[in-house]
Length: 211
Image (cartoon, rainbow, N blue to C red):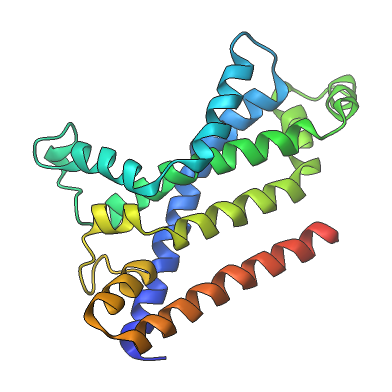
């Protein structure tokens, strides 16, 4: 692996990993609310997040581009064409995946576990943590699926990052650039690395879920 490709690989993992952590910050509370509480509009919210699973990355990229651009609502922060912009874009992109899969995992936990925790004197927070512990296998699947979606997407990374060498170039944008320039071997190398990352994480997560 060349030094340039290694730099791109590490940057891709860093950006997508940070995006996953950002998304978890708001996705987990949403999933806990949807999975544990009953309220009006709950079904609509769940349907919304399920529908957003298929959102085109270019559509999301365009929407965020207008927000981050100089004349946009967040243009004052000069986020466009920075790694931060890609992180935010990927975090928003994978939110429906995390919310939907985490909600399903939480709902699959036996309700008696939460009731038992309450009976033993646990607070609402402690009871929720007990449910999360039981739903950890589904949580692993959600995290890996979200990360794989983030690191393998192109539209958000290209539109918000600009594919700047040494700053915002990631695996997917490198693959696209290599094809456009006729650098097929470099694109193939980047593709193989991307597939190895995705498949390795998937295999590891499947092993954890079986244990």
